[in-house]
Length: 113
Image (cartoon, rainbow, N blue to C red; front, side, top):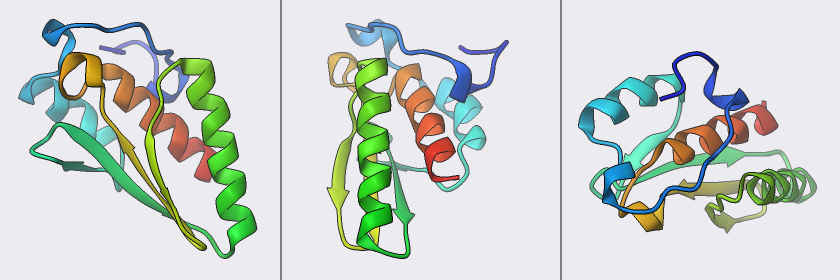
């Protein structure tokens, strides 16, 4: 885990295989660091809805998040609407949540902040 640095300052690493999937204890440790994020899909994914006053600001967030996702090589599923964006993170290569999902969720929060 990213015990020494905040999640938003950490960087993703390549994770393949079920041994990198976070267990219940790891999820319980990291989730409190992400206010507003919820577990979905039987705790196999993280989701949060970011709200904005207009389409321009929504798209600005989406474009900034795309840049971060590309830099971290960890890409969310997005549902984009006029005044909001629903962001969903999961690590398909591990079959659930990995530390990368929490790192990128924290980075998304910084962008919206």
